[in-house]
Structures are given as C-alpha cells and as structure tokens.
Length: 169
Image (tube, rainbow, N blue to C red; front, side, top):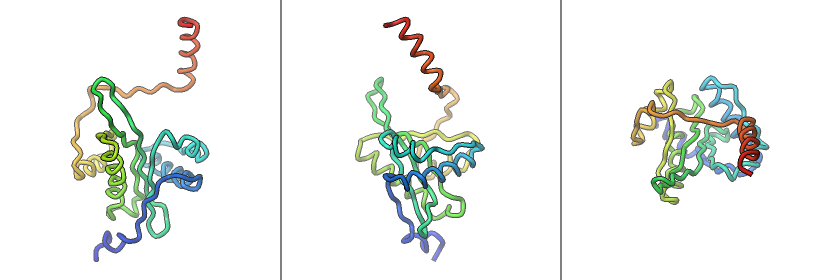
C-alpha cells in the first residue's frame, strides 16, 4: 500500500464553524504566511466574527490539523458571472502527497457547482509547485502581468471617506 492509500481513511475534512476551528485555522494560516515569507497570523476571534465573509475547510490526519482551504464568493457585474475566489490552500509539507490538497479542492468544487460558479485563483510567481498542482487538477492558467491587484488599507479608506463626505454630502 502506498502512503496515500494507507492514510486515506484517516483524513477528515470539516467546515470552519467554531472558535476552536478558527484557532486551528489561524495556526495553519500562519504556516502558509511563513512559507510565503510573510509574518502574518490572523486573530481567531476576528476569524469567528468574520465567518460570514469567507468559507473554509480544515483537513486533519491522525487527529492533527494539517491543512486548510479558504475562499469567498465574487460577482462580476460587467459579465453577469458568478465566481468563487480561492484565497488560500495549505497542506503541511509532512502530509503532502496524500491527496489532502486535492480533497480540499474537491470541497471547493462541490460548493462552486452548487452555486453555479467558476473558480478563480492567483498563484504567486515564485510558487511553481502550486502552479503545477493546479494545472494537474485541470485549471487553465494565464499570465496576469496585464493588471495590478490593488488594495485599500482602512486608514486610507477613512481619509477618503472624510474627503467624500466633505465633497458629496
């Protein structure tokens, strides 16, 4: 029996629903951030408070949480298209090769089909292993050098909101 077959029955996937789940998700997300060279760790209390903003599943093997997937819904008005954006997928390196990542993606696929939505994601250019994983699953890829992702931080949004209130109200 290969490694994947021997562990197949011992792998469980659960939805993130409780503060204990959020604590585990926080630890796994911290490992993912570290893998990408970031020093991030989401607050479990904030995760549980914001659980209506995202969906996530945790994978456990041998009663140890070893991976997670997180996503959120998106809608493009210009094309009237539903999509689900896969934000994070992580499997502890000691547990890779056991189809845990594929099983987590399977949970996302079930949700996308239920919602009649496409799945979208971005892969960091310095993560060729992830790109190959998604290609192996059947994802189409395209080079995204044609656009920038932009994000507004809360402080800057508040400044703009003050400016807008003075101009528009």
